[in-house]
Each structure stands twice: as C-alpha cells, then as structure tokens.
Amino acid sequence: MKTQIFKPDLHNIKICSKLLKESQIVGVPTETVYGLSANAYDDFAIDEIFKAKGRPIDNPLIVHIGNIDMLYQLVSDVCITRKRLIEKFWPGALTIIFKKSDMVSKKITAGLDTVAIRFPNNPIILNLINESNLPLAAPSANKSGKPSPTKASHVFDDFNGIIPGILDGGECQIGVESTVVNVKCNKIEILRPGNVTLNMLKESFLDLNIEESYLKKFKTIDKIVSPGLKYKHYSPNANVVILRGELDKFKKYLSYKNNKTDCALVFDEDEEHMNFPCIPYGPKDDSIIQAKFLFSCLREIDKRNIQNLYVRYPCEKNIGEAVLNRLIKASDFEVIDLV
Ligand code: TXA
Ligand code: MG
Image (cartoon, rainbow, N blue to C red; front, top):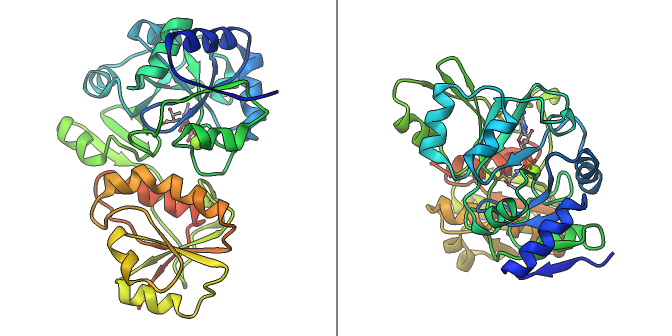
C-alpha cells in the first residue's frame, strides 16, 4: 500500500471520508497532535488501529466529535459539571470521560464502561467528521511508546505503507496531547495534563475541587519510585535523562559524557554557550513554545541515532506541566538534581 499525503481541500476530505466508510484508517491533524482516525462505530477498523500502532488492547481510545448531537449518541449521562466543562472548553484540547452508551463498543474503551470524548478545534478534522457524519476514534498517530506526531511527515515516518492516507494540516498549533479529565461528585480529576491547565480549571470552577491524578513523582539518584508505577512512553530510542539545575552545572555534568554518541536538549538561549552537541526546544521561560516543539525534537533525536539525551528541566508553569509530564515519561522517570 502506498500512503498518500493529501492536501486538505474538499475533494480530498471526500476521498478520506470514503476511506473511513470502507473501514480504513486516515491520519488527520488536530490542534494538539495528529491522530490515527477510524469510524468509531466500526469494530474492524478499531482493531486495525490497535494493530497499526502496536497499542496494548487495555489502553482505550478517544472518540472525536464534530457537533454536540454526536455526544448524546455516545454517552449515557452528561452531568452538570460536564456540561460546564463543555461550555467553557469545547471545541478544544480537553478530553472528558463519560459513562458510555450502548452504541460504543468495548473495543474502543478497552472493556471499560466509560468513554473518552473530545470535540477538537481544528477545521480539517471537523470537516472530516462532518463530511463523513461519523464520530472518529483517534489515538495519537505514533507507533505505541514513541513521541506523538506534530507534522504529517511524522505520521508518514511511522505509518508509510500501513495506512492509505494522511491529511496534511501543517504543524500542530499546540504540540502536546489534550488534557484528559474525569468528573467525580464535585471533583474534577486531571488524568493527563495538557493545554487546558490546572490553573485554567481552578479559575473556571471555583466551587469544585480540582485534583491532579497523574503521576508526578520521579526517581532521583537515591530514590526510585515503585516499579509498578513506571510506564515508559513518548520516548525516542535514546536513553533520556532530565537534569535539574543551572546551566553551568548542566555543562559540567556533560563534560564527563561522550560528545560523539550523546546529545543535549536545551533552551534556545543556552545554545551559544554549549560545547556539546545540542538541540534547542524553545526559550527557557516559554512553555507554549517548548510544548509546540518538544515532540519534533525527540523525533529528530531518533534521526540522529543518539544514545543518551540529556534534557534541561522545563519551566513547570501552565502548559509546562504537560511538557514535564511527557519528558518524565520519556525518561522513564529519570530526573537528576545537579549539585
Ligand atoms: O490530543 C489528543 O488527545 C490526541 C489527539 C489525536 O486528539 N489523542 C490522543 O490519544 O492523545 P491517545 O490515545 O494517544 O491518548 C488517549 C489517552 C490515553 O492516555 C488513554 O489511556 C486515555 O486517554 N483514555 C481513553 N479512554 C479513557 C477512559 N475511558 N478512561 C480513562 N482514560 C482514558
Ligand atoms: Mg498517544
């Protein structure tokens, strides 16, 4: 099979819509990262997504909708808190967990009674959903465990010859995946940090408890988190280590490392001071830019065949929570405090 990259005009949206109706998978841009989309009502196509990605079958998929009517076919209950979340943040980079309706197959939900739904804010995927009139199940369009794709060429690198086509929407605006939340009584639980941040949720819902339920710990040299909590993800082939501390300590640490096989992921302003191979991932205090370019940089590391990647600890504010979360997982929780 030859994988085509489609310009996202109406003619090609119609071609892709037809492919979806024939149980095929289509690569599609969203405002966060590219997705690997299929008809959410087609169990055969859902199986094909899991196979193509090499995704464990116990990891459920997100269903993308293009209008609110679609939501009511997919879920059995929309409580007042979820309604408020929808009004405030949809369309956008927020995925909400609901109790599923009978229309949703357990293949999508990995056997759970809940389903994750997102109304994306990108005209290309919205055109595809509305042209096909299908909700689209779509995980990020990377091989399982690899960095998510933020350009059509990244999807092509992972799925050339495996899927028939990719709609090319250029570079994704946000660059990290959506925030995933669950709602329990008067509590919103953040299961994965993203562009809709803890602060945004706190400011919008003063009457509710907002809880971060994702793993924030990391192992330091003398402290290793429970191995059962570890789950490597978003990772290039290189071994990734995050180093927390000032630039001079970072440089000193690298002076003992191999500059032929290793590389550093640094801030833009560090680059001119480095005497070690490095790739910049954005200005020190600009989490929005760091989020946008993080995955591209990790993919570039794979292209350069690097053995060890040493990363400057990101700014943790706002979307920086998501940047740190992805880096911690890519590093397999390996963060070292420089002394
Ligand atoms: O921005 C995004 O969310 C991108 C774009 C393509 O929309 N999609 C994405 O999908 O990141 P994926 O499959 O890579 O991540 C989905 C996350 C996984 O961590 C999965 O475990 C979680 O959502 N998830 C899905 N259904 C769930 C459910 N019913 N309960 C709890 N977590 C769920
Ligand atoms: Mg993913």
